[in-house]
Image (cartoon, rainbow, N blue to C red):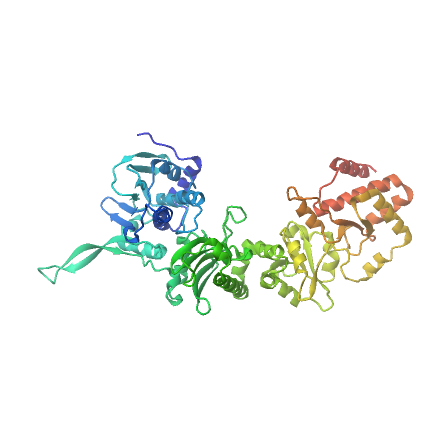
Length: 626
């Protein structure tokens, strides 16, 4: 029989799996059981949409069986099964997920969650086995097929005789090595322990034949072994259990079983609310950002249950957009089982639940910030941008909810700090919360515009996210302290140097007017700088749009061109100014040359494009030839 090759991506993944990059190889069983649960879920969903299909939950189960003599481990289910084409699509292509495709093709408004991405989870079987065999008969089909593979070299598919609908995955477990005990995956008590650890809350029975002992009939002092089929998972939803009965590991297992993420959650929130509205919820705050978080494919929302029965796969109305990273579920006896999506949007009880959940998430994040700072900072690196976007997108409506959760890098502390921490350290005479915007901390630290504020001893917040300035423009102030960019025309700082800059004589004013004329509409004004100490030149801005905002707005496709009002500032105490002043009095052509070079230097410092790079380099060469 011809062996078919895996796609190149599948080969690479299989190589990784076979070469054992994962420490916890036992997770393969979790993946196979979750896939089996998916297959039964699909039958359930079919019954919801097709009156000719009935779903009796007692007929559906997952079976884990061991054949020690032949080193075989079998995971079977009574789910929807696979056709020959689905074998090719799901098992021959990396990340070609039968469950994911099913989910996209059918807008699931009812039914159980389709837990995982079948292809990727399935490949984990190769971590512990030399040969993987899959036998399956699809629902409604008269044909069955067998898929088999020994690893990265490829796979075969052939017809097979199977009477019942469903799938059986058979693993030929590897021999023990010096580094790994594969024998444990043939031990029924070890397998039972793994199932309890990772899959206890799977909603269908997971059955195993467990060896037990009993007295012999003719001799009560002697014992004989026998096998008894047992259900080894509790099937009791985690949210219906008492918090005191559950460990951190239980919540993490539920997180993995539901495929909320491939990281470990930073925090879990277990809510049991009684009163005006009664509901239970288990929520998770992830540590890492999902790969598709900022794509159209990402679906926010919590699973919504009515008395244990899923009525909505993703209920977006339970979470505000700025908390859309939260995963989990809500179960309420006060919601109608047959409630529609449109009715939910106007449901008073649902709105109360959403309000309580929002308050609880905020409270847990504040506790995390206060008591587990390192964990919060890890979370913030992933989702801080979303919190800032929440302030901007709702025009400050959520200011009170989000402002105390924000963090920015501090010029003094050299780490992330909160706005409250910044304001608490402000000297009495400091009027503003100062910030500087740029692509990175390293670039901001070199910005000429920071010199005066830093020399005064004031702390500067570094804005490196594209949303930062837009968010603080909506915030306006924090605890009555207004935000002020270090590039603003007026910094609100008076020193002897700034007074000198203000007292520019008429000759200098005429020279600056001439520079402004040379630069035409490129700048709004040219003036003596009050902020520069060691650098010769910089750009400042006036008005609502800053230079950094201009750069961000320019990067948005089809966005109308919006420009900041730029001010070219000259350090009148720098040697370059003396050279500039000399050319103004003696050589107008050279003065024009110097003016253009200084302007282009200021553009480069800001990370803005030079209109004519060739002219700029030629001008530098002219200066060097003098």
